[in-house]
Length: 207
Image 1 (cartoon, rainbow, N blue to C red):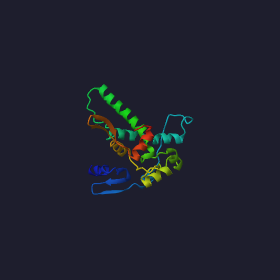
Image 2: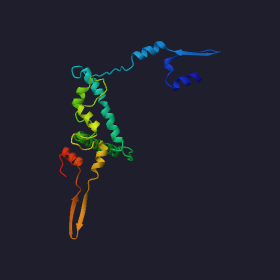
Image 3: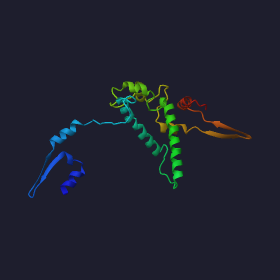
Image 4: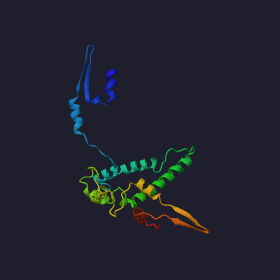
């Protein structure tokens, strides 16, 4: 029983055989089983009920790999970006409404990231990146433009490269000040930097 606990602790039991007698204990590697496992290393099987005429094998793999975007979306919702948790509501309708608002907020964030891709670390040319990929099962690669952008830490417009969160913090420095000179009162907007002006251009927003 003690040997079984040790074997199970490190998840290595399947790789060894052992014999326990009244006077001794012996163990050895299970070479046949290990060789069979090694032959399957790096191989996985994806099954789908979608007909091949609708979704080819390569498209099935691409759809499976695209689940990483769903996982990233959940991380964004639960992290400091949207903070869907903790939820302090006690009624189901309130919880559903809270999650719906967070989903809508993520949808806005998704559109913002797509529009701001040229000034973010993200790849702004996914089609070129896919063309550089040798196989659908090969690791994803960046497009040549993304490599240049990351290497220079500058966008093609010469402005600093940002992550989405850092860019939002940078935009938060813009303010509208209420100015009073004697009896005169007016609103004064801060002057955006070149990087902030580029963001407004991408959003098609006037400041």
